[in-house]
Length: 146
Image (cartoon, rainbow, N blue to C red; front, side):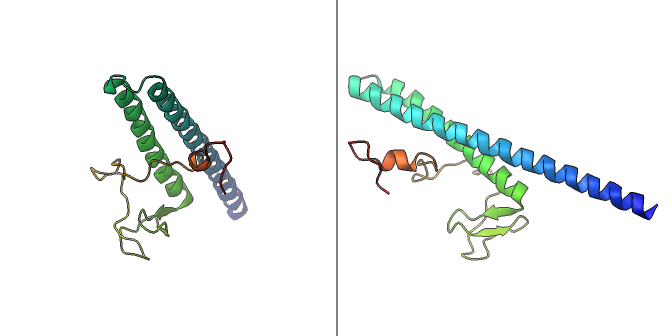
């Protein structure tokens, strides 16, 4: 029975790894969608302001609220993604830490915990997303500064 148990365990491990890879790819796809949508909303915001800068601020606020909601979703999904990969990222120094760590092993900052009340709070300077960095760094001619 030892050989059969070994084969069964190997099969179970392979199935878990495939499931993990599938979850990681699914989260990456969702994060990319949210980031692309944020870029579209920023563009809509700019167009609305350009066409009518005296527009009711509530129109702009709704778009800004949508952006913040999507940023919170991205924050949660990135945490889930890192958890699937087996680590936590430090919000201060971007160091990888063990998934059970509470404080960063490099700078000592408290690591995010989804159980915390302020887990979905947003920093003022984190509204630029990974895929939109090039978009926001583009000059007025559309050339992307690298």
